[in-house]
Each structure stands twice: as structure tokens, then as C-alpha cells.
Length: 123
Image (cartoon, rainbow, N blue to C red; front, side):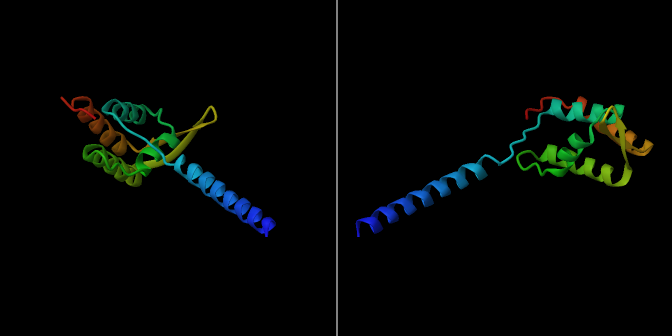
């Protein structure tokens, strides 16, 4: 009888520890990525100059931005540019850089000009 009680307490303890570990493990995996106007202009500058890493581009266009409608609109325009004008990636020094057509570079340049001149925008 005492053995059953000790075994029950031990199993409950193991269950609670397992639940705690599961909760902490999954809670820590929630990504948190906040953009600023400067982040957007740097990303667009790199894209126009051919220095944008494919990973950075895919992270930007692949996430939904729920807390700022202007950033989300920019992301959606960039996603359309990606679908219509991306010409693959170029490997330089072991890193993949995104390449765009001339029309895509023109659209990105226009976006860069627009975002550089936004006034009184607080992210």
C-alpha cells in the first residue's frame, strides 16, 4: 500500500515535470521580429545594390506583420516583386544573394525612395 502511494506520487511528479518542460520548450520557440523604418530601408538598399542575402529576403517576405499595416503593405509589394521579378540567387563567397530583373530593381528602387522620405513615422 505504501509502495503504491510512493509510486503514484512519483508518477504525478514525473508528469508535472514533463508538462513543465514541454511548456517551456514550446514557449521559447515563439519568434519575435519587430521592424523599424530603418530596417526596411536597409533591406531595400541591399536589394537594389545586389547585396541582399536570400535568407534575409525570405524571412522578410515570408512572415506576416500583424502589428503595423504599412510594414505589411510593403511586405506584400515585395512578395509580388519576388514572384514576378526574382531571377534566382547568386553564390558569392559561399553566400546566396537574391537577384532581380531590371523591372524588379526599378520597383525596389522606387520603394526605397518612398521609404527613405517617409516623414514622422514612428514604428
